[in-house]
Picture 1: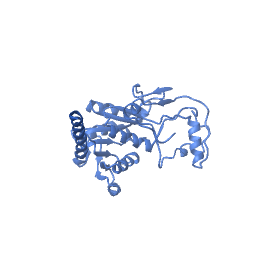
Picture 2: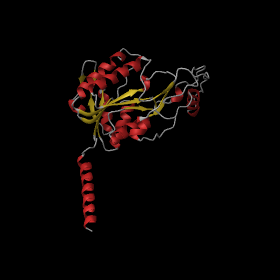
Picture 3: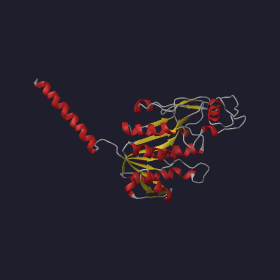
Picture 4: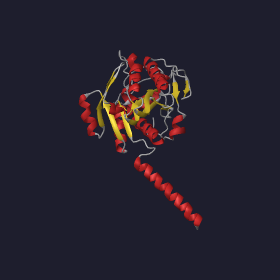
Length: 290
């Protein structure tokens, strides 16, 4: 009886400590700053506020501050260049900072992207406990093979090269706390894949596999990262399904009532993006099929 009471007391104290930890926020990630509340960043911010996180969101537009506030997101006006970040320092005071500012393609700003990330990281240093860089699977070239987080990166596009340069700088500044999420092609609300090739003819590379992820799963992986507190790794975020380009886009066009494109049945210059870290460390189950 004495032993049973002792075990009961120990279990009770353990449970009480867990409740206290949850109440006081010990070992929890509760305050999130999202730099760049665009298509992905805003969707993530909305999801997190619904899960009772304290969310700070940034925009470069004065007009968008009211939109963020209406979604219970603490709004911050943040402007950044390759030289400096102009922002209220309180924005960077967070348990986790998500950097969600993809490089602008076909722009003179493209080559400044690594330097912009550099200035942002300098502002976040010693302010944000964890930093998560939203990157891209464009760091992998089309080398006709399957790649995962252990594969070498050989980007063959300008955007891929500047994204990789930003990752490298990130790892230099945060060698022990560098978390990178590499998204495949993002689809979802306002990004209907049926429009990509609708009505086109003789589209090349029709048999190449697609590498895509729906916004729902992109947000879901970011949330799971916070829940698991599985920081310090690189994650390839891509649907495990890789249908042929001609099948996927023809079906997407048909589903949305658009003209079905015609593809050349060939397979060249392709890759398949896989992840070993998402299932191993996040145990994430994809919700939207591709």
